[in-house]
Image (tube, rainbow, N blue to C red):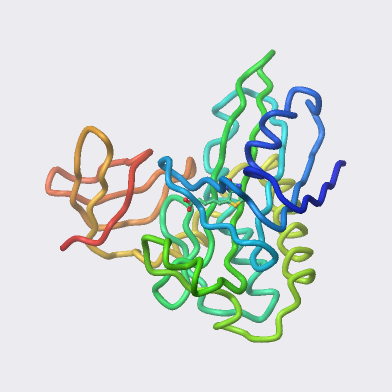
Length: 241
Ligand code: BTN
């Protein structure tokens, strides 16, 4: 396995994406002190000041094509929650598909990027941004309510957080590669901050209102709507106004 620690990089996800083809079949982790172009989902930026938070990406290869990835992003959310729980931080919740919340505010974000499929193998870059000790000045640019670990539990060692996070991530992926997402389906729903809540799911083409009723074994959201149960595979979840 490769492990690389960088002082500054545009984005740890981009960095691994560019190197992926030379590391087929291997795992490759990168941590950076700062990202000059940290990226979030849906083209948003991820505020990534120097020396404060955790910016981690892991390159993983999968056999069996794209369908082997169903539920992977939710698995990564569970790995982050389990790592935090091991560090003594309770009350961490998940928001479909893969946001990590505490105290009603966003604590960590996950960005999965698939490089492509060759001979029914594909590679995925799994990026995790975890707020540890965000600076107020930099945080002014964050466009949603956020929280950092320091305000939940002071005196956490950043090295320890990074170590536990990587350890949980690797073992969750091992389990996922053997058994898929199904064993985590129940656990995920227990941690879902929107379970049984009324929400709106927005995609570029439509908006669907309904009540969250858990996830299926592919990690898709089960939404009870006026038309019955609908299965949602992608979109942005917000609370119904
Ligand atoms: C989101 O919630 O929008 C996802 C945020 C993901 C941020 C992490 S930080 C490490 C990795 N490198 C990036 O550029 N993004 C991810």
